[in-house]
Image 1 (cartoon, rainbow, N blue to C red):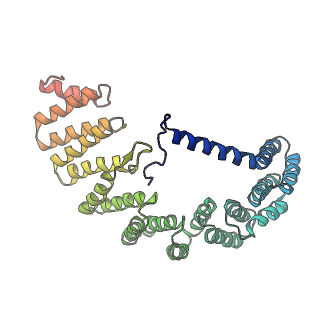
Image 2: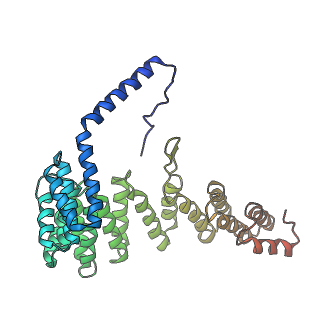
Length: 356
C-alpha cells in the first residue's frame, strides 16, 4: 500500500524553496534538451502508426526505416514489435514471426520479448508447440502481462481434459516462479480448480490461505480471503466464515492523498455478516448492528436501503415490533423512493403507526 506522499506544499516566501524549485526546473529543462532527438523519433513512430492505419504497406516501410534510426535498444524493440504486429495483420505470417522472434530471442526481459514469444503461440498450428511456448512465456517473463494470458491458455487447454494433472502442474509452476508477479495468480487458479473442478474444499482452503499469508500485500489476497469465506458458508462453517468476513470488514484504511485503501469486499463482508447472524445464528441484535453499520458507512451504495429493510426484518423476526417500526421509519426518512417504501408504508399503516 502507498505510504505518505512525498509531495510537500511549497512555501512561496521561502528563498530556499524558490532556489530549489529553480534548480529543479533547470535540470528538467536540461534533461528535456538532451532527450530531444529521442522525442522527435518517438513522434515519427506515432505518425507511422497513423500511416499504418491508412496505408499498411507504407506503414511497414516507415517502421523499417525508423528501426534503423532507433535512438536506443528499447526504442528498437518497440518499433520492431509495432512492425511485427502490422505484418501479422497483413497476413505476412513468416515476416511477423521473424520480427517477433528477434525481440524474444535476446536476454532482454521486457514486454516486447514477452509479447513476441506469446504471439508465436497463436501463429502456429502445432498444438504441442503452442503449449510449450505458453510455458516458456510463463517461466521467462513471469512479470509481464503476456504471462497471464499464457497461464490462462495453459489452464483452458488442461482443466477439463486432465483435471488432476492440472492441479499438480499449477503447483509445479508456483514453485518454479517463486515470488514473482505471476505466482499468486497461479495459486489462485489452482485454488479455484480445487474448489470448482475437483470439489476438494480442503485443497482450495489451504491454497487460498497460502495466498493470503504469503502474498498479503498483493491484490489477490482479499479475493482469496473472500473465496475462503464463500467455502465456509457453503459448508455451514459459520464460525470460520464470520472470522474471515470480519477480517475484511475491518480492513479499512485511507489517506488524504489516495483516499480509501479499503478491500473491495469490505461492504459485502459487512452485509453478509448481518445475514449470517440473522438467518443462521438468530443473533438479531448483532445482525442489526452490521446492517446499520452498512447503511451508515455506505449510504450511497445501491444496497443501503436493502440494509435498512433487512434490519427492520431482523427486528420483526425478533418480535421487537417497536424496533421494527422504528427501522421502517428510518428507511422511509432516508430513502423515500426506495423499492421497499411501499411495503414499509403499508406495514406502518396497518399497524396504525405514524410514518414520521
